[in-house]
Length: 442
Ligand SMILES: NC(=O)c1ccc[n+]([C@@H]2O[C@H](COP(=O)([O-])OP(=O)(O)OC[C@H]3O[C@@H](n4cnc5c(N)ncnc54)[C@H](O)[C@@H]3O)[C@@H](O)[C@H]2O)c1
Image (tube, rainbow, N blue to C red; front, side, top):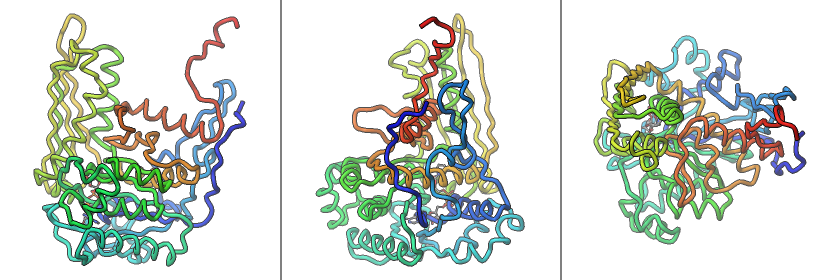
């Protein structure tokens, strides 16, 4: 039986503006995908909000509605899109250039729609993304001024597009590695650092700051330090804005967070895990720069440590060697190939190997995540949730968590967390999978 204590959730009325920072491969695949789906020309495969169901109550009740029928999400018809990019190409040109979608099947039929999406001038500084050059950039003498210019863009977009609500998703390039420091501890320090053009304030942080100040939920699809530090977390709480991220969990890391819980569940040891990737899109080119790669590497390396818990199982995982490589290889474009060689050991220490060769399409995997995040972040805000949304860690390589908590990386624990949060929001009983009542006398 459903509980009667569902959370109050404002209805998803009116238009939801989705602001993408970056109008590259992921953003255009997402936007063009939604438009094709709206026109009945394609299916939203990979999207939990569109295709997923949720079991409610006992198995005997046979209640498993679609998630989008269970929770009040914005309808695809109500989405409108905006973007910033230092490269001035409109969404049509950018989609063709990215080369992900079939030109004749999924781009030309919606050409007019895509051509109307022109990127706003970006807050961009090449010292944070070394391999990119762009001319569609905002002038500004201080970082504070640039953040204020973004706030103005947000307000204008909302009015011009007649949006009720907005969400922002970082779909832009991976910035150089920055460690959190004193300028990130408090809002006061952060704002002073903006005024002083402190190099520890990256462009992505200015977008996050502008979004939160405008009451717009912010999700970070890349591994850069952006909204995951105390100043931003406090600001989000005080403004009642949901935030989180970072780095979409799409290909190799998704596989890693499924296989490693399997080894741990069966108490199989792991001696080594060697992961390598080749990809030839612009993201690959940006990640070819060692400073951007370091940001990505940290995000990709973290997952095994947390899942396998070598401190609890030193015999099984204490000596594990973990290596991640990304190689820019232009002929492959967006069609990444990720290889994993995993050296495991079993009963009495006998060695075995598993090889994974994932021939994936990076942006095809990422686009449905952008859609789900936009819809779920909007839901969070309408449900009165603010600050870090750990229940959406399902979508991220480096989930954001409260201070003192370690991130939960296991994909299926993350899925349980997500679905149980939806049950909680709607006042449904949590599913524990104990089920003793079917077998034991009361
Ligand atoms: N595709 C995936 O599976 C996947 C998975 C995890 C993370 N990501 C991350 O998502 C991001 C987007 O990937 P992509 O393949 O679309 O890359 P892309 O290079 O095609 O697009 C990124 C766009 O961001 C723009 N940009 C850079 N700095 C900007 C700024 N300051 N403001 C506005 N725009 C800016 C670039 O000009 C570019 O057009 C990357 O950071 C990537 O690492 C992608």
